[in-house]
Amino acid sequence: PEVVSVASLEDITVECPVPFSGLTLPETVMVTYDDDNTGQLAVNWEQGDYQPLAGSYTITGILNLMGESTNPDDLKPEILVHVEDNQAPDPDIADLPSLTGTCSVTISEIPTASDACTGTITATTEDPLHYNEQGSYVITWTYADGYGNTSSQTQTVIVEITSTPEMVCTETHIVTCDPVVTFDLPVATGECGTVPVVQTDRTGLTSGSVFPVGKTTLTYRASNSAGSATCAIEIEVLPEL
Image 1 (cartoon, helix red, strand yellow):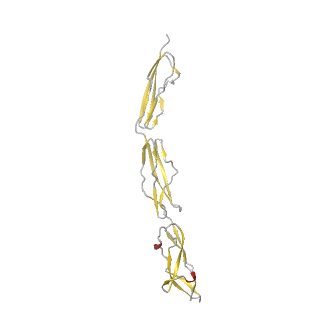
Image 2 (spheres, rainbow, N blue to C red; image 1 turned 45 degrees about the vertical axis):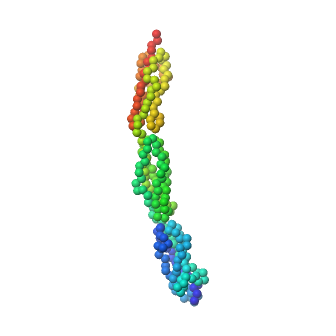
Image 3 (cartoon, one colour; image 1 turned 60 degrees about the vertical axis):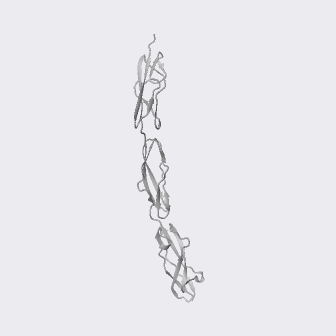
């Protein structure tokens, strides 16, 4: 008798990554002959386009009749294999190191994770990758495998200042007969650039103000987290003769 049909086979579902050799496939399939009799025939399965990645794959077999692989009437048994990915990516570094820099920190090394199906996954984040303000920040990295599974981890970024600012009063003692006194205001710089200067005397007077006769001392301070610097300018207005 000749084989006229092959029974349908139930789908198989496996968890990624299962190689083709690791699949548990039926060794025989039910066939129907032209005389309406049925029986089991051995089958040899071919890998085809199957790969241990998430997705669905149709695997085709060749019937084995009388010890020889044959394909009666071009009838080929098929089985649908569903490969599922239910595991979240596993970060390659369990605890990401803190990143510390003076004045600024730029993240250039993006962490990665390993996934059973996808392989290496590069993290993404919605947080900035450059920081130029002093402080402590936390970056949240996310790993997505493309099949609905995600994992995340955090990394600390610290921007620090290690030295006190330098401050310059270009003029420290001004003697004038004109009560309207104009002078250069102090400037301060640090390792990270310009540092704001604050006038600390409470006179309310500054360059271009009308100063009283006599001596007036103006004081200034510039500060950062490492310390502060100060300087003073003495304005002496002489009386009219």
